[in-house]
Every structure is written in structure tokens, then in C-alpha cells.
Image (cartoon, rainbow, N blue to C red):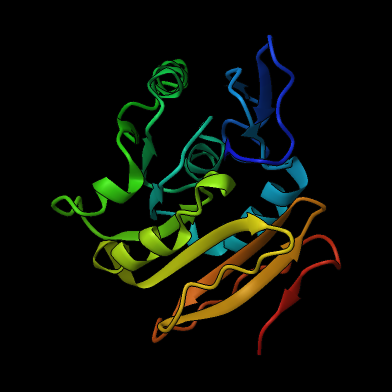
Length: 213
């Protein structure tokens, strides 16, 4: 959930999104009032995590544009081992830290105040199994982030990309599209790193998604 062009939150009030599944199911996460803060819909997140559920247990997760933390914390709720929540907005980072404390998740979730592109040029913080890349649409950060990402990835890593509905951002060589779906405002795509071992992932609960052979 990032500042972008779609679904700007009403000014002057704080909203919320909910964790959909797992041990924190139903927990509300605050969405601080920011210009253009764009929640990923419940339906899109439910579809994504149905796709990922078989590979979530024990996974290390990197959420590069964490916003409210909805993606990284949903992953932890469903069995991921740890999540690095990267966010450059200081107010959002403080909100993330308060949420992590409320969930008693300090051993698993680590909010970090940093620019994602800058962080990826610093010394590695281990290899990650699942990476979420849902940047502010207006900032056009996909190419910069994707170019710097490979050293941070496990050999069989999974990559989620969210982009405007009319723009299909591709991660380039070394990735295979596994599943994708579209909402009115965004394209939701899950990729598997080429050469990764076989894994069976669940089909989404709706018929709007497509797959590759």
C-alpha cells in the first residue's frame, strides 16, 4: 500500500485495512492520512496470498514499500518466518512500529526507515524468499529497484509486482510469470525466479487471473 495515483484516501481522516488470514485474521491496520496513499484491495491481497500460501511457512519476506505493512504482516500472519518492512516516510514507519508492538511481533517484523533503492545498494541483510514491490506509481521506481534486487534473492525466490492497470511492468530475464490478475486500478503479478525448484501453488478464488504454462 503506497502513495500513488489510484484510490486516494479521503483527506483529514485515517482509514484502515484488515489482515485477511492466519493468526492475526481480522486485525485492522491503520492507514495514516497521506496524499495519494493507495490501499491494495482486500480481494487482490486475498488472491495473492492464496497463490503464495504453500510457500509462506518459514519464508523470509522483503516488503520494499511497506506503507501500512499489509503485505508483509499478512505474510507473517500466514506463516512466514520474518519480514523486513522498508518505508521511507517517517510517519508511516512510526505507525508500522506501533502496529508491530501491538501484535507482539518484534521478533519477526522489522520496520526500517529507508528509501528502497538506497537500501538495496547497502550490505545485504540475508537472502529473501518472497519480495513485494508495490511502489508509488507516480515515482516510476520499478526499473531501479528490480535492477538492484538480485543479490538479495534466494535461488527460488518469488516476486510480487503491482503496477497501473494499463502498464504491464516486467522484471526482465531470470523470471517467469506464474499468475496475474487485474483490478480497475492495478495489475497484480506473481513471478518465480527461473531455475527455482518445482512448487505447486494454489489457484486464486476467482476466474479473473491468468497463468503461464
